[in-house]
Image 1 (cartoon, rainbow over the protein chains, first blue to last red):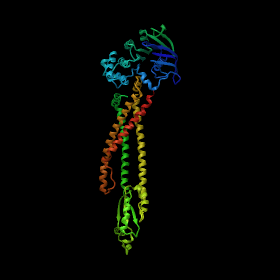
Image 2: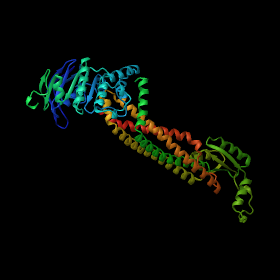
Image 3: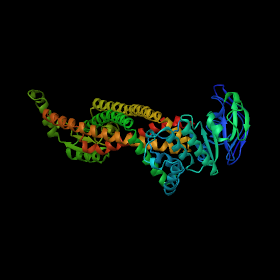
Image 4: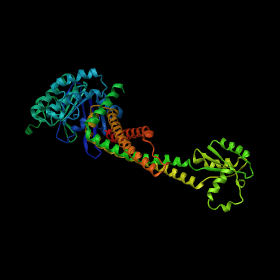
Length: 231
Length: 299
């Protein structure tokens, strides 16, 4: 599903965000990318989304080479992905229902399909009753669940989450993680970039740890940190 | 792009215009204001050129026949003159009539005309031209007619009218271009504000896989709606104001006794005006949207 080999990313301002990073994520996996702020984990998500292009190396997502992808093809590539951000990024002037429907409307889906799938996605995240409400009337946890519904409504092959629990308290965070896991159980590959130690330790999934732009650990059923003294 | 998508984009544009009421209102006011200013200049120049045309029809060309020609021969010359395309009307002035007018000119001083009768005067023709621009051309063709002795017309007046019309046309075109540029520039900046306020929205759309066209078109629809609304409001203002001014002006000037200067009736130009306003308003709106959205679509 995702293949990074020898990826280096240097930003225009000279910051070296990633240096010679290689890893592979298989179909159906659930992977945490962990590390302190500025370690490069957001850059990995941005590269997978083709928001940024690697300076050198090879980035492949969903069998597509993102290094040579034409600009016109990016939107169509992104439609196969679901994205969730720390700040939810919902459209403020659209209702919950419209926000989720919008992700389908841009793919020119049939209205019949939209009417069928949007309630399903909202049901899955437990927000059926909030459909006619605007995002600013919802709590943080609810807003994140809307953005999850939007991310999965098109049945993505890969779900990317950049600090999805960064603005949420631990209990709500755990609910979001369980939703992510149930999405993963339905076959979607899930990649979560986070520095939330609690959820990583509790989930017991594969952990890729980044520090200063390098992978320092890649472990199945890992904890947030091997360094027990910091626990 | 399917029909359904087009409908969706038009709906999106309309709904966004409504949901961003304040910004839309500001933009509509700016478009209206620019169009009102444009409309005022446009109407002034339209009226001046319409009245110039009336003036332009005034200068008469006078053709004198050979002095020894009798009136029967002269009327043959008259026929040849009226055959010319440029001539809209010809009136023959007989020696007798001519003598009467000359006598009027020397009124109270008839001594000068003593012992003279009409025979010393040539037969002459007064011609009206459809267009004063043709004075120079026709002078030559008139002189080439057998029996024509001399051709006279008020050269200075024609030249004056010609230069005024030239400058008027030049100035109105220049003014229209400048106003259009200013309106587009203001529009671009206003829409830029609304786009800037929605920069986050645009980036969200890009993250979930919306194509550039999909993001751009609702904004353009919005610009067109704003331009259209601005045009209608501007037209209402200009048409109403102009009707009041034209009515009272035409009344007043008739009372002073000047008949040949008239402001154009609004009904004769309302279609042209409304069409022009809508075209300019929507064009400026669409262009403004296009230009301001361009820079945000680069991610």
